[in-house]
Length: 215
Length: 207
Picture 1 (cartoon, helix red, strand yellow):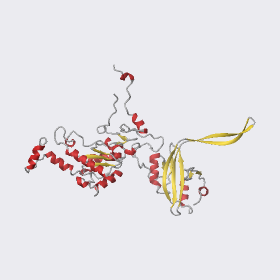
Picture 2 (cartoon, one colour):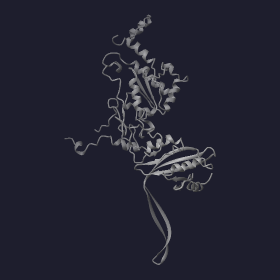
Picture 3 (tube, rainbow over the protein chains, first blue to last red):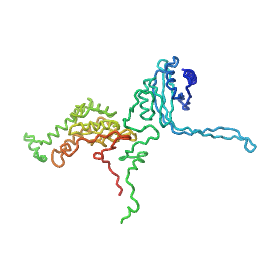
Picture 4 (cartoon, chains in turn yellow, purple):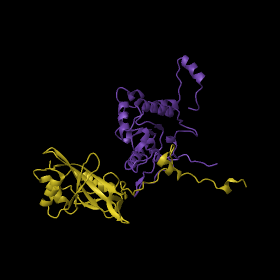
């Protein structure tokens, strides 16, 4: 299989205007991925599926990610002249990345027996919207519905975008990091850790000093 | 019918070849030996329930091998598995559709308390929040022997039920409800979170 850089170049040549970034994965698995922009997502996906050398005909997995606001600290060693003497000085710079929601697709090729190539799309937390890749890979249909259900990303162009796990009347998005589950901890026989903290809120208040004193 | 028969008199009569019983004993004897469960399973506990019904453990020994596909013909609901909040109204509805007298076995950690999923947002923390439960079986999942034990406990319970008097069985009491309100799907959770007529958790008291 071609390397991600090669695939990136070929996509950029085939889909004019597409913005493709390579997202590096620093873990030992080193599964680097392609970040594609929402506008050209479907064209890029169609290219990945139809290109004779790539033929990613199988979308095995679609999942959502909720990224919180992040601060990335970078330390650069430079040499500076302090009081006429050259010294090594560490310059730290901070980069703030606001939180966003992400949909990640894992693509394989049954025809060529290669893969995976991972593509991801990002959207803001408010009014989260991405273009659906269900028209390209039918297997994404239910999984995009699941992302819609649990992360609240609307997939434009999805044929049947409804909640799939939670009931239709449900309004929250449980897999988002700011979700707070309902408080039904009124009866916990053996509470511990987090459950203990939540159960304590249902315990009756301790009697105050004045209530304790016999009148 | 009257009160209990004197045990000494009964054994004396039995020795003379006369078998004496009461309506209540006959009725309960028949009921306890033909408990027909409702045929449904919710999760992995259902696999153990199926094993209990199969030949090795053979629930037919207790007269309960007739799993009914309709709640109208069932006496017993075995809540075998995780009750998700999306499924809970259907469980209560099935319970409501069962004719009296009816019994509930909550099988496994999930059915009695939510089990390993109790900190989640989508699992009901015990079916006893909405319907009355007769026998609780802990375990994850409980072995078939545990379900058989629950059956025997339930048979013991049925055997001790009274047909008349102040302590008569719930299903003969017109005042006692045989249906319970079905929870509605709310915006954040089931509404209500529990039925206070059924779910009475112990309260912590400060002295």
